[in-house]
Length: 448
Image (cartoon, rainbow, N blue to C red):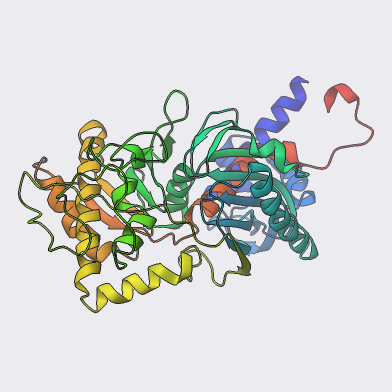
């Protein structure tokens, strides 16, 4: 057992160096790891057999000695699955060991008030199709991480996902996929997606704007999750205690002012009465916006719960991380239409973004006072709306803070959470490659 644990540690040491600084020769690996050249050669052989590394042309480490063969990560065999359940879409991607996306799929579907079993069943179909397609390319999916827009504990229990209507759900168990599946908060994984595939540095606050709004706090290249794993519920920070009712049970939450539904409904004609909780005389969409610099500015009560049609066909998503992707998650193409109206200077659309940006700035003020991030990255629907949101958000922050964090737009794209989920699995494989090596059938059971 001691020999097995030492081998596992050494395999992780070698593969970690290759992942971090490769391509590297065996001689360079021996120098970096402190292992003997004989040991390194044996470990590299094991990793070659597992398809985790490949050898390329001869390279010279220095001016003396014979050239060595370079060892680098291989994307030919080992892969990971990123999964996401959100309020109005499902998404999957397959990523190889080099963190290259090999395929991704998304399905626009309204998951609000649907049974968790129905939502997970739809995701299982999408995931199984992706795994089968990956297998035709010689890729074996070794694990999966699922992103969910709610409070998830370290054991994978979704305690509460208000916009899905979920309480105390274990989606990983319900998925029943033929590989290990863990569950994490969508905003946390989107923050990791921004860290690895976007422009995020080692320290930043990522804000994920969808129908709900979440935040992921990255310090030193790691996500801060809190004691119970529930950190980052920015969408349920109270902006106005007398505001409209929220699905979480509170009133005046940020997502009722700056969430996707709130923004889209604020730009449509007033066909329905205002939501519960909007006091008479409060500013509403379409009215002339109040001066955003006034300290007594009231928050608008924005409508926000009309669901889109649940069943719409899924489609493959083109491109790789960072490419512009279609607005696949948005009901009726509403986001693209909103952006077009903003670009044309439509007064109702501009007013809605001003109000949403102001509310976002108020909510972020509490987060900034508490954790003092140097950069705030706006992702999800906030990315395409950034030119119109960033000004009022910064202005609201500046009313309270002398030094305002830099606001940046996410460059990881709309798949940030799915990418972060898959990349988290890749990190786990690199940290413990021995768990994914072929087993010796003759080995004693105790050593397995």
